[in-house]
Length: 439
Image 1 (cartoon, one colour):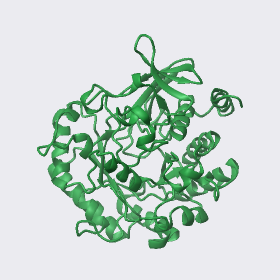
Image 2: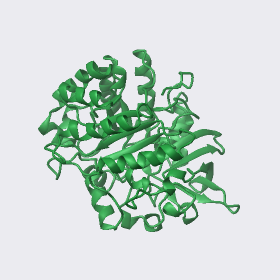
Image 3: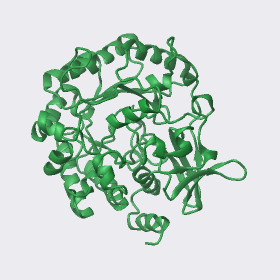
């Protein structure tokens, strides 16, 4: 096809049951978006909430390659509405790609729009600077550095360990740039705390709680790199768990507590529960056995795929199946040179994994793969996976949930096009808006 517009319109016609909003959202997430200078923020001094780089870069270039977008950050997220496709309100995480056919720019009246192949296709809204970002901790650190919020303010993202102990080519997940993102921010002289002090986290949360008068922030996620030995004298369950314990003691019931960690033994998982965590995300990354071994060599070496899956099922006995929500990285199934060569094969494999977990009452979720250029898979696959794969995955995901009578997982806000706030994939946008609003 001669243009991206033709490709998108063809897929919307072929898959009419997938919301048109999700088609555009997936394309923006997999391929990124360019920003005119008129659409960039004034960082923490302006009126627009800037991109916080909360764990990964989620960009299609390193900071030095992003031009002015590296100096004046783009918004954390954008909202798409209206335009010739009459888009319902759609929240999209920003992934910068200066060469993308999508561009955000202001028109002659100063109104932001999303342009595809030079044609304006949607109005663009940007997140206002929250009041709590305008206040600093006693030591001068910003709330955005310690406790940034995403998903249009719904989720406080606490990356309390900004590097991963799976290190080097023989251990790092092949699609993950957490360690590089740490290095590039330090090289650029940006504040980027490696291990966040629990008292700093509590102080940042106090500021959010004080100034978030609308109570838009509903959940927090504790996360960071894998811990294979210890951090600050603590193993993984105790390290991430002690933040949850402190938060729940200081702010009982204020937020839904979530933790993203490795698939840990049942006794360790019980510690998370005892510390006050409500939702556990033991991410399984990719379903296919061969691809898991190739793409997650550290996880295969330290735990192994079969044991990882056993631990996920065991964790449902602790948290309840509905509160165990493992993530996978949608699209790496088709990454060259080892991935599936057809969309049919990739969808069949991923659906097999969905059916495995959903048959046990566990509802996975996914993040749309962004091929960051400093990762092995990003270097080899700068275009990511085909858009058709992502659209068919949404179709298969919803169909599998329906087969097992499952509803949208808790801790993600409302489902449905025009209502969803989860910004790094369209799985919530593609579910029925008829479902009751989750917490």
